[in-house]
Length: 108
Image (cartoon, rainbow, N blue to C red; front, side, top):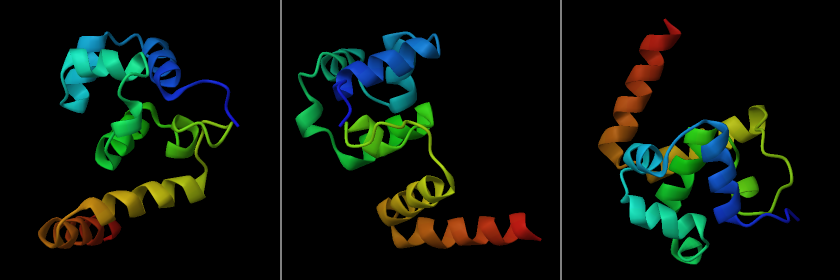
């Protein structure tokens, strides 16, 4: 188990990237005060999956690490696949079709 809390991980990863609370909050489309509460572990238990995935994506870490389940922060090919699958599951049908069309264009 990871000994850091989710809030500590978010703060550490944010600082590694020299981001202010305001800058990261803007990227996540949340308020600075809410992000501050997340970093202080005051709101982590109620975080929604979409925001969790966004945070992991911005920091290029896996969600298991963010949740304290996995000690390793870096994602391998399997983790990248899982991330894409999570995004896909969060999309509505219209966005899924658009994603498939984009992928087909990129593969040509």
